[in-house]
Length: 457
Image (cartoon, rainbow, N blue to C red; front, side, top):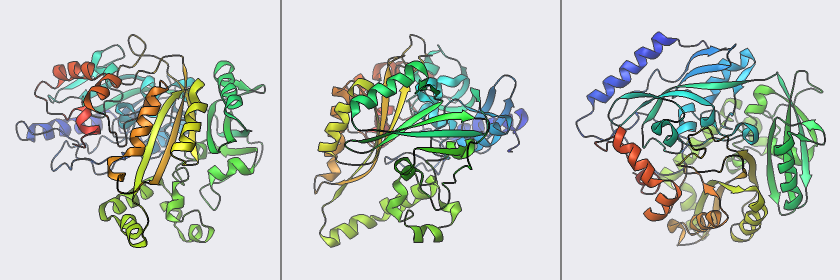
């Protein structure tokens, strides 16, 4: 069990953070001095930045009140290690271990509990944010800074401390992998679970799924359990979790392993490194079967353009990176998947239903305006497609952006985006962001959201 840092250690870390801001040259851009990232878009390198050392842990856990005080740079891996011994977890635990709580709030996080618990920022009761002016502001739901913060990606400041709700959980999870042959019955089943909290009379605590191919869709339905009905499976070894959806109809995992079931193989993306090959898997150290290791390997490839050079030498067309998560209304899920199969052809894709709780003032979060109470499905797809010389212009990504918004959906901004400024501001509340930024960053020292996401600044 990770020891809580306590308030004295936290206050010392905040003092270092303030001092690092004060040491920045006058007018210099304000950035984090942070080497790692879960983003999939190019970023301008930061030569100097805010010192966030010591802001990477849990301050305290209130087991009786089911809350935790957490520092902004704390990873979900460390957060779960601190809360799970108390029989508690965050209400939504994003799939990858090294996503930070602050990152999931200023960006967007999602997981299988999102159909009943919304998104990570909707469990935040209070947070401290260091703004572009160097002030640490405490804010709560209903405050302009708080409500505009989700999906702002650091353009309004960085979370320093967050008080979050926790959920009581037992030690095990039973799984049912249910196959569907068409999207109509899939959509009906998803809405049934959202409405009743059950499927075939059995409680559902977590719901996500995979679309392997047209006519082959699975929902993985999780039920928290105090006692295992069978020996729990281990997908950190030779077996690969996503394949189990096709191979077995039921399963049992420990709660810990359920939370990180996707991390070991980065969903299915570890296959690009040969890690799903049984021989390679035996030789690949278990401690390296993690999403952050694969992410670093991708970074090396992007730096040295190894795959691009090999493709060019073999005469293969230039490939376009298509790494995106989008949300579409449940009723349009089949429409999007049919279009995606024809226009992109990438499979498998991840499916994760969600319903926003609408805890912002006015209900909708302005920078990512999901309709509260409406069922959406997050569709995640990560890979490359052969395009040819037009690949740098992102034709596939541009087509996805257009189709998503034709269907009344939204696109996450952790990866590449190609919107023009007018469209971007209309979709992500550009005027509202500018108003909040003018109050808390009057000297414009934080990079704007559009400049970060589209212009890679």
